[in-house]
Length: 124
Image (cartoon, rainbow, N blue to C red):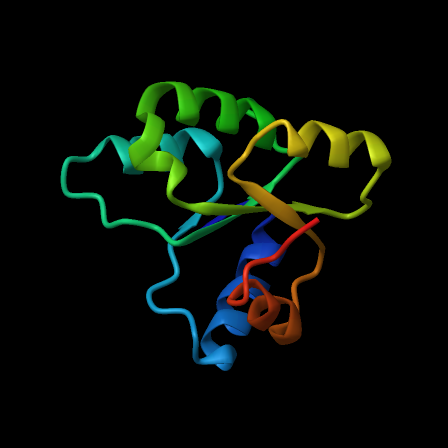
């Protein structure tokens, strides 16, 4: 799953996921609130990995993590998160480490190599 408000980045994610051959299906959401609605569905498919943009309008990536872990608890925490950002600051690393489900960061734009590294569990 990818949660990112940038339309061009979303097109790139779809292209990279298709070219990698390791992502099926790719769920894409432009707003964190849309992803929250997805997880509220009783028939929502489990998600192995969520690439989450930090800076989004209305609900940031960190706001999404707060809300989702509070509302969905253990069921939701089985997903591995990789935070997406254009610049990784030490403050962002500290904040992300406060969430046990966040396993690392990825700089935008995502490449096939980045995606393949996630299949081996991205880490800080």
